[in-house]
Length: 322
Ligand SMILES: Nc1ncnc2c1ncn2[C@@H]1O[C@H](COP(=O)(O)OP(=O)(O)OP(=O)(O)O)[C@@H](O)[C@H]1O
Ligand SMILES: [Mg+2]
Image (cartoon, rainbow, N blue to C red; front, side):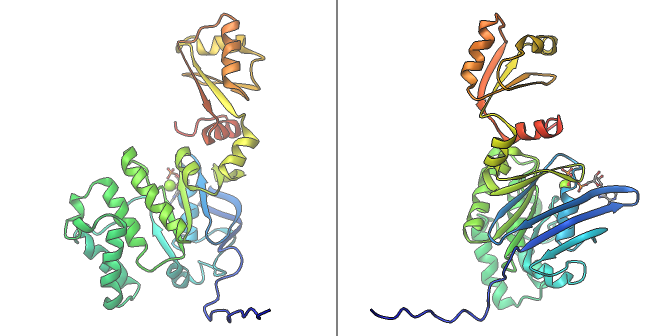
C-alpha cells in the first residue's frame, strides 16, 4: 500500500473558531438603549442575518462590528480582535456596505473603486486590475466612466458592493443591501451575493424583508427593540413558530374582526389583522373547506406556506413591514 502523504499546512493558517462572536453586546445613546445585550456567533463562510423592523438596532449592531461605533458594554470579537481596540486591523478584514450609499458623486464609477482602495493603502498595480475585475463582477463594466449621479439605484448599490470588495475581505457586512430597489434589481443583487457566499465570504446582512432573509441567510436572529427574539435557520424558525401553511382571508375591513370569532377551532391558531384574518394550519385547503362549511364566505382567500413574516408576527404580535 502506498503511503498517503499529507502536505504541510499552509503558513497562512485560516482563523479557527467563529469569525464573529458577540456576548451581551449593548449600545446606548444617552438614556436610550438601542441594542440591549445580544449574543451570537458566526462561523466562517456562513450567511448570517439580522431580521427586524425599523429601529430594531440592526444598523447599530453593524456599526459596532464595523468598528465605527463603540459598544457600551458586552464583548465583541472579529477574527479574535476587538474592533474598539484594533479598529484598522478589523477593518482590513471587513467589507462594509452601509445602509445609505456613500459613493463619491464627484468621481466616475471606476475612480470610486480606485480612490477607496487607496484609503487601504493598496498599490496601483493591484488596484487597476482589481477595479476591472470588480466592475465585471458588479455588471458595471459598461459604466466604468459614467458619473455616479447617472447610475440607477440598483447600479449604485452594486457599485457600493464592488467597492466593499476592493480589499478582498473575508467578511462582508451588508446593511439592508436591497431596500428601496425594484424586484429585478433585487434579484440581480441576490445573485451577486450568492456568488460571494459560494466563494466562501462570510456574509452578515440586515434586512426587514423576510423573502431576502429566506433566500440569503443560512441562519438568522430575529431582533426587535434591541433584543433577540429567536434564532435559527429560516426553515427551523418557521417549524418552531408557525404551522406548515396559512390561510389568508379577507372579509372586508369592517368584518375581519367580527368574523374571526366564528372561525374558532379551525386550524391551530388564528391571527386577526386590520386587513385580513390568518388561519395557521398544517393543511390550508382543509382549513379553507372548514371555513366554507360554517357558511362563511370571504371576499378573497389564499392558501400559502408559512414564512418568516408569520414567525415575526407570532413572536411580536406585529407585522414586520408596517
Ligand atoms: N446616533 C444616534 N443617537 C441616538 N439614537 C440613535 C442613534 N442611532 C440610532 N439611534 C436609535 O437607535 C435605535 C436603533 O437604530 P438602528 O439604526 O440601529 O435601527 P435599525 O434596526 O437599523 O432600523 P432601520 O430598519 O430603520 O434601519 C432607533 O430607535 C434609533 O432612533
Ligand atoms: Mg438600519
